Image 1 (cartoon, helix red, strand yellow):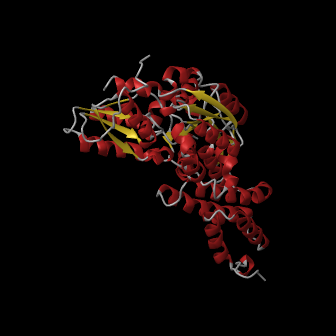
Image 2 (spheres, chains in turn blue, orange; image 1 turned 30 degrees about the horizontal axis):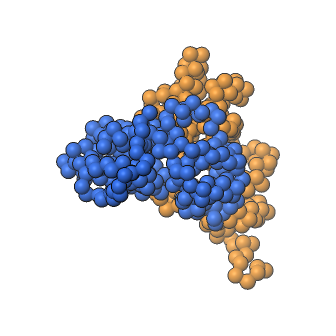
Image 3 (tube, each protein chain N blue to C red; image 1 turned 120 degrees about the vertical axis):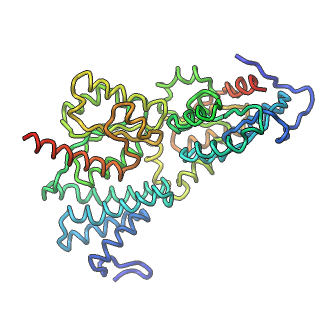
Length: 211
Length: 234
């Protein structure tokens, strides 16, 4: 396990455009990435984020990352992708192999936040769990409730969530308000609720190894 | 007489009413679709004609606009709900009137996966196209597929997965069919958001179907080939 600083001795503000390692990331991770950079005073990174809403339309992810990589090539010492497979069915890994770029391991962010091994170990138990990260708890209304049309058509709820049993909020930060939001989301979806604090998990480890 | 501002479906001729069903399916207006189905039946349309010309054709248009990025999942689900309501009326009548049967399909989500929206759309469209569909639901281990195949003797086995972590299980099922010497007895179609043609080939499926409409066309095509082969070897 890698430990990263949690109490910076002095303020450090992240400014894009000064690093030599480009992190191409899902917008749903932006807040956590910047938090880790600022907490640890990592000066190596620039960050380019792609729209978090592609979570619902993964077919946009591979072309979006390809474009970012090609724009950045030659401008950075290295590029690292902070995306899970995220429903691309191996197409993201195929692209990255062609481009000679690495990514954080794992099928999606729930897995690398939880720790890929720990996540795999609970796969059977969690099959009927719907995961919320800090980002998804914060933006549940926009990304899930409205994004899936449930605000306009609540009758679709059983079609989307009929096979789920519980919401598992895998928290990156200890934030009571977000926990309340996640709990309210579970209630709205008619699901049980479970809270798991996991922190930044392997996102922190992977970034540290490239800082 | 219709209420003010409301379209009186009974005032439309057959062609206009069929067109209206397509529009109402597109807009996910379940009650209107149900009403139109009743009207068309009252006018002497066969259940099969109502199904194919009004419902299936309407969903085909929905499918095209979904593929082209004009419609999104919520709209498709509303349309599917409306079609389902129409099919609920037609199903017993189709059984009575002996509508043509193109073949039989067992379809299910693979082990470890519970995401069944796409699979249910495929099942509905296959039924609408004239296939008998045995939907074995979610989280199916290989034993469950084998039991369903044994019980129902389908022409087609359909498997679906949404997760990158569960889609490799399709190979487990296909390899088991091979081990038992049963693979060539069935047309194996696979689908699901993270899949592609390359994957389907790698696991030994007959085809990858990127959406419900493609699944129907692919199934029809394979059934035609199967009949041709049977005729040639007879």
